[in-house]
Length: 194
Image (cartoon, rainbow, N blue to C red; front, side):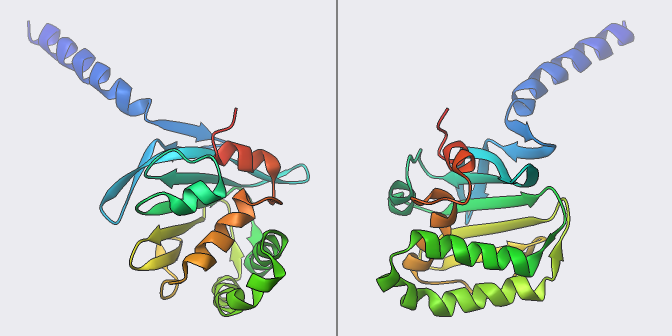
């Protein structure tokens, strides 16, 4: 009788665990959750995909917001916190990645606005230079927290004071979601375009 009770209990626990298992995606071996909590607010996965550089898979990115967004402007206007996470799939020189991110901002920001972004770009460059290299599995999180600004976390460690300017957050997000994104397929994936 005890054996039957244990089997019933095991099956019941397994059935209750199924929805939890379905609450994440696997993209190139990276577990992407359907929701994330930022500053006490539960955000929904807007989209996720892989950044390719030529034939190489560089990182998996996922985007979370308080509501579904279909563009950079909608993301910036959405209430509450936001998060973009990059999980590295290969070793990458951090300084080179920092330069590519700066290039991405330049490609998506009008010249007249670039001068206002220079202090933030210098700070972001310092963060990447200080970390030297990234290896497969390393995680970078960019989070916008209203009233605080954009925080940058690398390997679970906060990297500097928050970037307080909303324009800098928008410029950073333009790398992936702007009119000239680093990777069109990734832009579509982050925006949930099928």
